[in-house]
Length: 561
Image (tube, rainbow, N blue to C red; front, side):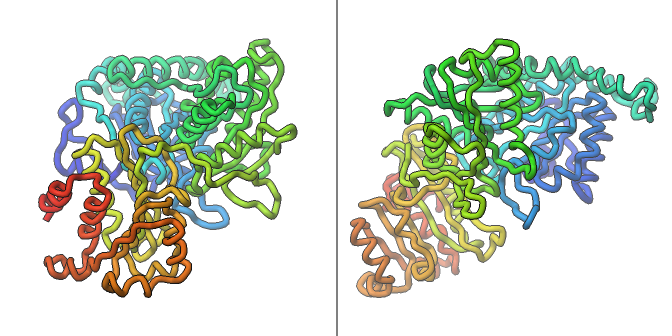
């Protein structure tokens, strides 16, 4: 996010009003938050991008910005907090650590389209509500995914953003021409009362956000709601979830409902202020059990944050007699996906299966095997919901060998030059350069709603760009029967079979794998490309997969070299 903003500023790309935005790099996130606070007080539209510990350093200024009812949006690719160890990967620990600051929290689920749209909606909403917002989406899973996006045009943005509200924001700026006292010290006689004066702004925030979502739909045709329900109107089991996992859960619910089950999913977009009325109204009258899934951990708490809010909302509805199901449903809470731990359809089905038990676990984890505190639940990893029309491809490479870059180009080429929808996600460890990278590519005739890795037995195409990997990694376990395996090797077609491990040979025979080989280093050297084999392997993928006609598969590379 910051890189794009910096690039546009360097290229002198103007904003809606013809101004070149200033991009300033501070010494730390704490300094950045202070600079944002100062710029906001001067009447500028100001934002910042952050995550993890960086967001925590902004907390003191976040209290001030919210306390002064200043419109602002921070865009956060939500990531893990360093606890027993540092992790650069994604979950909701950082954003849950700022839920007490007075900022609204609005989540974008997957795919990236929603992150773009919600960023605009949050900006329009904060100007009206005067409640600042943290707009967050799952770090890596959403922030690093490549997918088809309909870009919001400048004309659509002009229609969405109310310039009168901007003028009001600028009129509240601290300036010599209009002196105003702000940021004083208060004593016990008035501080309490001052804190209570903001209540009406938060009471109106949910309505304002939904109205801005509705206006966005009128302008672009894409409708969002502060909370959304997917599934059967007669569901007896419901999952409540927020973030990229919501799309997976919704797809599983739709699949199960076509296979003689009655389940549903409540997707949370606006988390703070929590839309109690909307949540209660969405629940089917038939619901008996609810599982609330949090992508965070709060040690020592009765339950994780979203779980506690759901329980409180249900209790309020019971007390007021507004719960359609009449009595309090059984509510269980689970943790999933910490540090970008994959969250698959199989795990979602595991949660629904747990809910179906007479005595489901009150607190559980899914996606790991917990043999210490025994909180984990079982699931069948072979379960999948994607259509057979979706082609799934995996590429094993070495960090900095160009594999990831080539596959990013592949996704863009497929999305731009074919009728297919395309999705790309890239798995690598925190070492990046020199570590193993796995590229997960999907493409098909319909939008791809699959924010998770390609699992064992699902890949139609597997490519190994480094010969040494055949002795170190079981890549064929990801291949589905009758699929393709492409190997970059220095050995000839006549020699290569005998160089493979015996287990690998057996698996390839059992799965009837179509085996292709190429000496990409030799081709790269002959074509003057040195050791850069990524484009060679990319061309092989296009030729074998047939996703592009052979005459077209090499043209994008000609354009780039």
